Length: 169
Ligand code: 5GP
Ligand code: MG
Image 1: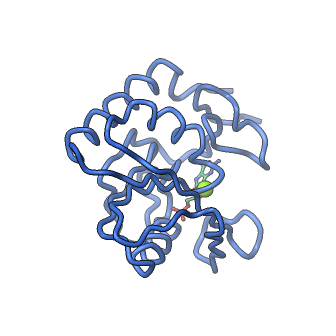
Image 2: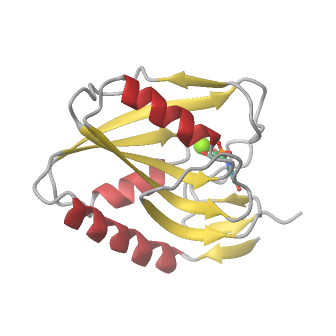
């Protein structure tokens, strides 16, 4: 295991993102929407540093044909989403790779009547994006490697690791 981002580095950066969110949303109630399952750890850490009133919503996106990260049909399950009509949303994902997932979910949430929507990713892979998408908040840019930990999985394992690492054979 090659550690790319240590627990300490992540903690410092998450606090900085929370400070930006607190500044940008000062006094405005917020709904933080986490994309399952990868954003769970990030969401749990980030929300505890956010000082505006907030609700939590969860949404799940899975690709039809297995675990491919390339373009394909996404199935969106919003059974765990709170009512987003008229709410200011902050959509969280673990990693921006091709950009398809976030693009689709942004459209889905806007269609549900969100008042406004900002996006936040912990990681952004450099050189992988296939559709134009600019997150409002980005934790770290990382090289094109398959990473695990801090919510990110390989075959649903390793999500609990407190750091982000590159899985080596
Ligand atoms: P996109 O739709 O932007 O291509 O893909 C985003 C999703 O692909 C992420 O939410 C994540 O589930 C998955 N993904 C992309 N790169 C990685 C990676 O390096 N590690 C893991 N564990 N998941 C990844
Ligand atoms: Mg994901």
